[in-house]
Image (cartoon, rainbow, N blue to C red; front, side):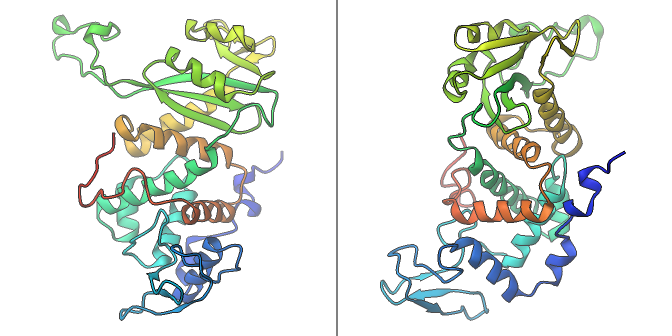
Length: 328
């Protein structure tokens, strides 16, 4: 029997011990090369684009550059997801390594203990890494790489606690007895390829989005839920009735179910609550973990760090500490 990829040496190319042994100069060099790929790590002013900049470290030794063109100061993380960071760069590299090494997700409480941070700092840091992961999904079209894909939906949040006495309990399946906070994560996943999640109120509300993000000619697999009936007008559909079988006559949604298995385990085992304004970020994290499950952990860390260095400041947490804006 062949050894599972995650158990092989090919999957473990970076350990936390490797990051701990790095010097601050080595961490700075790694981030410089990820931020300024075209210049092999030579600083480029984010304001005027000048290549004429020199090191001008802060009194505490933190790396800073000064542009000879516009006379402005900037750092490696200026204008990126990690802009205005307070921790040393080595700590950010360690955080990314810890985050990527988890298979189902990382508890924010555990992250705060691992790095000696407050819970709030760990929460914001990990959501920024989820934003970095989501960079890979911008503009993604399902069906480019594989001719078949599965589509399915799963509901999260809106839990209504049942009454203590049996005679006082209500049928929570009825709309009037629900909280109205339940949301649906819809996943489209190529069979053997990439995936793309989104959040809607119901499965039916995702139809126009699905039609716009699936390439014509792609064969879609779905269950017997009536929400997907309208997709027959544009795509070849293969439907499976899960009351009779999980897969039959070439039809199955196992690729989508595998995604929801990871997301549910992350919710139940680590986060306990992933509904609300941040549900999409958790869904994107699970999608990224599914797509990169056959990637060595060193490459995973490199990919997330590179996306963070190329991305703009966080859309969810800009001004979060100062309460300048709230997530909507």
